[in-house]
Image 1 (cartoon, one colour):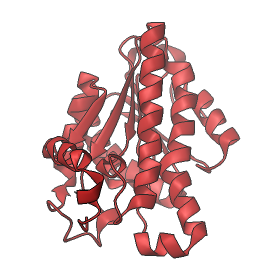
Image 2: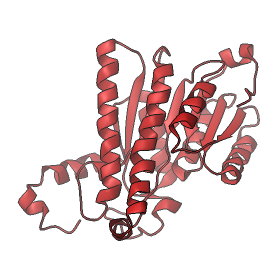
Image 3: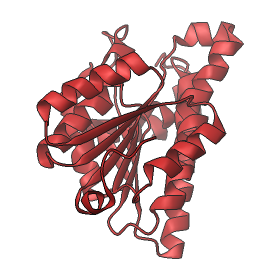
Length: 262
């Protein structure tokens, strides 16, 4: 990746990397960060060049003074992920990394189609973990650095309605928890933030109009993410009501849980 700015300029700018920048949630977060710091350096990573450039073009109009660059790569390729993290850490390590890509399949289809089930597990679990580990190795020396991962309330407890997707998000939660523990024991300043959105109105959830609790507006969810990341909280539920909802669901006895179609 060609660095869009000189070393001297890079040292004075906030550097933000967004993995999965074409997701609606990530795009809205990017708009808010550019509103806060219009002259920041923003690096967008995605899987589809045309969609990535469309997002970048919109952001450039909103913040002409920002330095915005794009990189397209295979999110399932461990070597490509390692190279991207190394390149995005030049000439200096990012201040903030948001890992936001995901895939929400129909549960019934994932039960029947093992290739889809595997893809769901890789995109929502394995791939974000690899990105996080690659960036964490470089961000540990950044004072006040933030590494944020988009999980889901679906990872809090296995439910018949989305357990393949939920299993991947559960993997992401255990990973974030372990990374937070390691950094705390080592005294590193890097803050790892696991974000758990409830059902949100995005293209990925277009078929979930009747979701329990309704679909939250994506701009409100993005605002909650940006606030939680700034605070460096270990776990952020957005909207906040989902912390209570999932606490109730997690506490249900198995015998009762198995009588509920949720």
